[in-house]
Length: 269
Image (cartoon, rainbow, N blue to C red; front, side):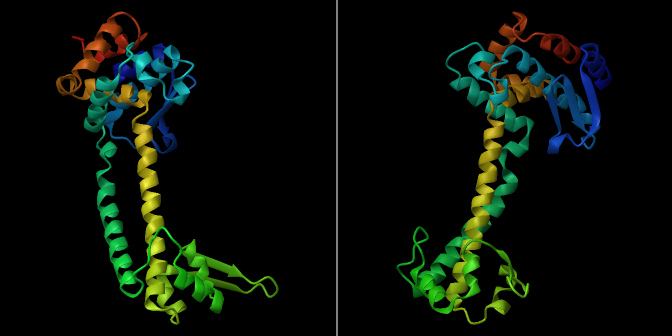
């Protein structure tokens, strides 16, 4: 089937590359070109091609907003898109399980458990300790000793080069016990706690960035089209309002040539 899709796309004067790294994604569309990762399984080729072709169609019909992700209000010609948004998110979760962020749940739980344990250990000696405030006991220690452990307030791995003799020193949170044996146990716990805070924040920021990507109207729309090809009945079932609006507009010609390529894959549409 992918041969028919490729043939149709080429007839539309679209340049297609099937041997790209695709900027870390399965594929992308830009300036009349569809690039597909050379690493995707053959059975996914049609849905990825269709996904990127949908971006092409969207870029042509909503030129002013496409680069910002477009709008569902325009795509579905309706002002209240709350129901359609919910349905398209369900389709996205169905089409791409990565959108559920399941692989991040265990690392997050691990980080949160570590944070709680380290905070409790510190509070046994310093009951007024709060993560939202400076750890005054540690700050006082750093001022008195001029300890290079101060760099762990911001970093896990440290390289220090002395300006005159160009002596290089390396310190790592992984060798904290050996590098700073003089540190009190809870000062070490605090350094470890800061490290886990950073890791947890970095992971949450990554999830937030991915959520913004998956919720872009143009991505929701493209995955909706993917869903129709992957499993037509399931997609219609979980997104009935979106489907009804889409079919009405498709037949009215709102989506340009999208109907033609869909008919290659879904003759009864």
